[in-house]
Length: 265
Image (cartoon, rainbow, N blue to C red; front, side, top):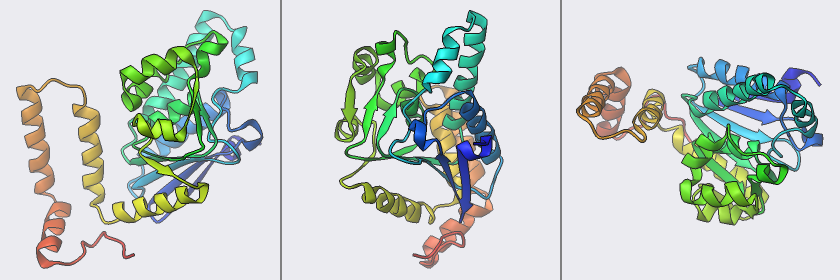
């Protein structure tokens, strides 16, 4: 299987679908998949014609985490080699987390360890109620270090303290109750229905405004309420308010018509 076949990319109607494609390995990732994902995030971040990115897994699982063969090789690495290897994963995750487009994860089956890290980097998570989650690194004498910053943000420190240390499995319903999952599907086929509804809704939004809104979360999250942040927020609204997209959006609202970017349906 080539690097391009390990992770598939399909772009249609401003939606890019990225599919992990190692179903025989439950989409476990190794250094090759990490490199492919990292390159894809770079490619998509530079594309103005893509407004939403959907992340899926082929087969029975979203991603079972790290590939066992890759982990076996890493066990014989030096500290320097392990550090370099971990940095590549850390940089790939950060690129995903900071992707300017809306990022939606669709989760079936297992999302374990690093698979949960990928999910944590996404803006919206849709999961089948029977999906299985776990931060099982401690069961192997490891820790979820590179994914920790994103998992902590996604589920909160209180829940992370539990699952980081117990390594226990929990299902989609539990993930929904603790806020890790946004939308819970009662049946597997409902995941696609929920995704379709979300894509319909966001197709009516200003594309530039969506990117600017995500940037607010990335740039302002966790910061103290200072004079600098007040000025920055005022600068941002002044800039976008004076742009063509906002003028069209406000005009369309007042005229009771759809904005030119809104798709019908």
